[in-house]
Amino acid sequence: SNKKIYKIAAIPGDGIGVDITEAAVQALDKLAETNGTFSFEYTTFDWSSSAYLERGWYMPPDWAEQLRKHDAIYFGAVGWPSVPDHISLWQMILPIRQQMNQYVNVRPTRILRGTRAPVSQLQEKPSDLDWIIVRENSEGEYAGQGGTTHGHGPNAIATELAIFTRVGIERIMRFAFETAKSRPRKKLTMVTKSNAQRHGMVLWDTVFNDVAKDYEGVVEHDKMLVDAMTVRMVNKPESMDTIVATNLHADILSDLAAALAGSIGIAPSSNLDPTRENPSMFEPIHGSAPDIAGQGIANPVGAFWSAAEMVRWLGKGDLDGVADQFMEAIENVMGDPKTRTRDMGGSASTTEVTKAVCEEIGRVC
Ligand code: NAI
Ligand code: MG
Image (cartoon, rainbow, N blue to C red; front, side):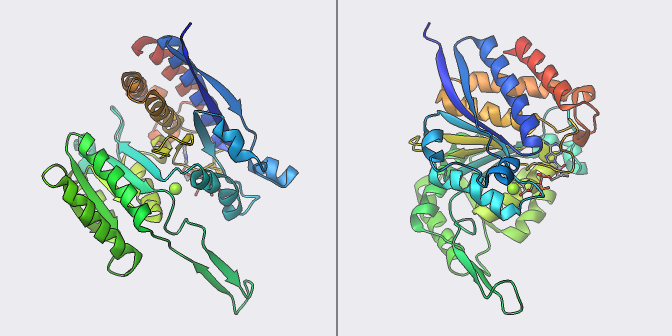
């Protein structure tokens, strides 16, 4: 047959990362089986904090080569209280984003049909929150430059350099303007802190204005300082559509966006190498949630939504309809409180939600 086979590198990682990756794989397989034109072949990597404690490493020396054999990477979460968080992040997720050239991180947020948001304006009019946050994914405070001297004692000195390059800024701006242009409202808001941070952030402003000239009359655009942006997100959510921000700012703003939309458990992310030379990586925005790990109650919706975005990316336009149907199945299930997890006001388990979504995929897709 000429069934397309997509090779997926699955990295469940730690805590609820394991539960939600398993849920995503089940839904993806159900989607493939129902559709019939494609299927997934997984390589599961046991790279995690518990493995690190046993072996002394998160990923083997040839990790990049191993990942490059795949069409995409599906990632759960990494981080566990027994390992300092800067070690787990810097030995797994951040090197992958950097070396796979995943310089864009796309974070859509909206209020899923039938669910409840915590802010009253959004309860009355859920459609007011429908955003795509475009996070710069390679530079800023996450570039990895900096250092510590004089130990951590009374004379300690530590630097955390924020790196911004014209190339890095321009490519994220172009991606953000194209994203805004592809959406019905054609509107882009750029976020910086260029009043206090007078070098890198001012360069962001300059490049934004330069790139904006290519979209005059096509994409409406404005800019915000990040502190005021948090207020606007709560008070005037309807005034925004696509948002572009630095690695650090967008990391923080996307957690706020998810909370406004109902739960951090629903929010997806796509770490993209737009050149397609390296596999892109799909993961919910949340972490390993040690406080609820092992209880079977993690919300798998962010994992499903991330999986839907992976299908969209792999299909290069051919599977947009399938990804939309997958989202429709998720939203149909969310409409019933009996098939929602605790963080969304329900009492269903991860497996119950997964089963319901798989059944709905069978009906809708
Ligand atoms: P977190 O996102 O793991 O948890 C924050 C809160 O949200 C917790 O109360 C948790 O129970 C809840 N939550 C998160 N996901 C949920 C889900 N799917 N369903 C229901 N509730 C959910 O963030 P936290 O606690 O700051 O970090 C925990 C660990 O995860 C740390 O080691 C951190 O470094 C790591 N982390 C890893 C990330 C990644 O792998 N990309 C991203 C963020 C954090
Ligand atoms: Mg985050």
